[in-house]
Structures are given as structure tokens and as C-alpha cells.
Image 1: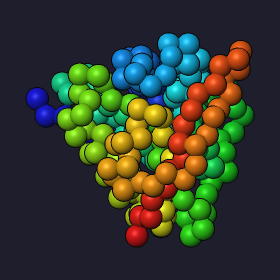
Image 2: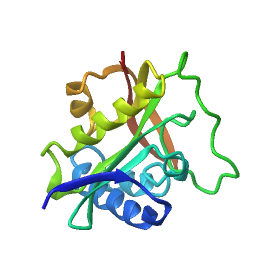
Image 3: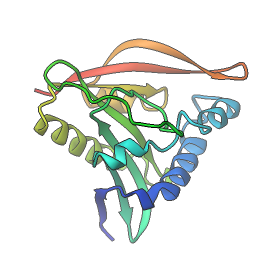
Image 4: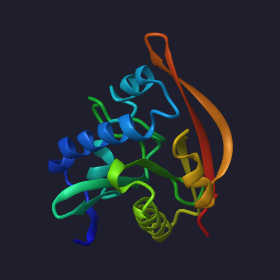
Length: 178
């Protein structure tokens, strides 16, 4: 069956959350401890409703089964779930601020088969079409090589405090979209 990439809907939130958990637990274990992954799944690796509501988040399905997700943001949040915030972050100025590449997770059975590339290309094309000249992202250690191959450059390492004495390392990356 062909893999279909479509805009995510609010009704997809539970399936997206399940995919994020399955992907993280399987694909990130070589890079992070189980404690780090579980802490991240409490919010950092969660669903951001504003991406779905803005029409900038995609899911990939094969035969009705969700096998990938990822998006781009036109808002100030670089990563993390929306939680129970009252309002989404402010919108970015595409002339002076980079779009945010956000929340890419691929089902372990579909990893390294080009699905992430397809979703990323769609995100970059749409961000470009909305006037963004650059993109930034916060890469997990497991995503570094993927983003480097896609033309993103390392900007700075980031150690994020997850609470409870647990930290997780990311790398901020950027790319011109022109």
C-alpha cells in the first residue's frame, strides 16, 4: 500500500502520542537512557496542538496505520508539547525569523526508508511558500545525522532540564530555505 501524507487533525492526537512514544522508546534508546526518554515523553516529546490547529503538522499513513509525523511551526516554540497552555505562542515574522521544524517521529518499522525526507521536504516547501527564508530545529541526538544530510548545520548544543534530576541533550540546527 502507498504511504499517504496528510494534514493532521485534532482527532489524531491520541494516535500521534502513541506513535511518538513507540518511536522514541525504540529509536532513541541508543542515544538516551530509558529514564531520559520516559521523562521526555511527559511533555517534551508530546503533541503540540498549535501545530495541528495551524495546519502545519502532517501524519503519514499506510493502510490507515499512522507510521510517521512531523511538521513546521510559524510560532515561537522550538520544541515541546502544548500542555495546558491558555493560548499558543506568538507568530513569527517570516522576514526576520526562521520557521520551526518540529516533532518528527517515525515508526520503527519505517525508519530509514525515506519517510522522514518526504515529510521534511513538504514542511520546508510550505514554510518557503509562506515567506520563511530559514528554518531552525532542536534535534535529538538520534536525529542529528538525518538533519545534517538534509542540509542543516549544527548551531549549539543544548542541555534541557526535564526536572527530577534528569536532563536531555539536543542540538540546535539551522538551514537557509532560499
